[in-house]
Structures are given as C-alpha cells and as structure tokens.
Length: 228
Image (cartoon, rainbow, N blue to C red):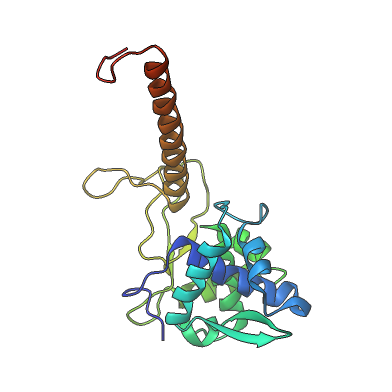
C-alpha cells in the first residue's frame, strides 16, 4: 500500500491520479483513459490549480511512477493502452466519498469544506456539509499516514481550508499565521510552480539575449571580453 510519508508524489503524479479519479466518475464511457486523453485532462484549463502544460513524455513518466506505487493499472484494449487508478486499494480508502475528496484536492489545491462539497458534486453527492467534515476528519486521522491536513485561515478568510498530503507536507500560504516557527514565510505549491516557470522563462530570455550580444560582438569585431 502506498505510504505518502515515505513516498511522496510529485505534482504531476497527483494531477494524473486526480484526473483518473475525476474521469472515472464524470465520463465513465471513456474510462479507462488513453494516454492522449490523460494528457488533455492534466492540461485542462478549467477546474485545475495550478494550470500546467505537461508533455506526453512527462505524463508517461508520472504514470510509471504511479505504477511503482501501485496507484494505477495499465490494460490493453482495441490495440491501445488504457490507464485506470487503483486509489481505493492503494490508499486504503473506505468509500467513494473519500475518493472524491482526495481527487478534487489533487486537482484544485487547498479548499474549504463548502468548496469541496461543491467541487465533488459530479463525482460524489454529499448530503450535507457535515458529511464532508466527517470524511475529512477521518482522512486526517489515518494511522501513521494522514492523507489530509487542515490549514490555517488566510487573511480575510472566514473558513479554514484542507489539503491532501500525498505530495508530502503542505507549505503554509502567506496570510494570517503564514510564518513558520523560525519566522520564515513559506509558499504554496502553486506559488512554487509559478516561480519555477518564471525562472525558466527568464533563463530562456537571458540565453537569447546572450546570443544576440555575441552576434553583435562578432559583427562589430569587438572582443568577447569587452563589456558593453
């Protein structure tokens, strides 16, 4: 059985698993999914946080990792590989309500109880807010490996949010109580992804600028060690 304490998933692995959970409930006629459908689901622009742009090769690597964790299964039908999740058994979930909650937290990031109830409606219909709260409580008390944690309220927010722990400990987003015990502010997973994307773009632009400057040096017959 997968243990998030010792084997945390990557962001893309949680996205792949979340998409499989979602599509099983919302588009059963097309489930299990092909690799192409899974890539589209991962890169979907709606109902996703953060929005990503994963390649087919990257999604396949995530699939391989989830297979090793016994969280997904590949099968063959109509000469194409089909992918399905094994989250109920792999995570030791007791019912479909818990599966829906874990799935929507992987797809949309931290949410309040009310948001979770609304966003899981197509996957599982909860009778009331209390039903969601009871499952969240049980998911947070799994022996030695809680799957969900309650976060501090953000500044200006009335209700606390909940996040999954399949990718390891959750960084506290900036806001009320948004500082660690050491006094250093932490950032959310979404913010980290956005920062990494920005850094990658800046590196690309810097490389292009260096190449342009090098061409200018050559055209003007300026030695490369001369600074502009």
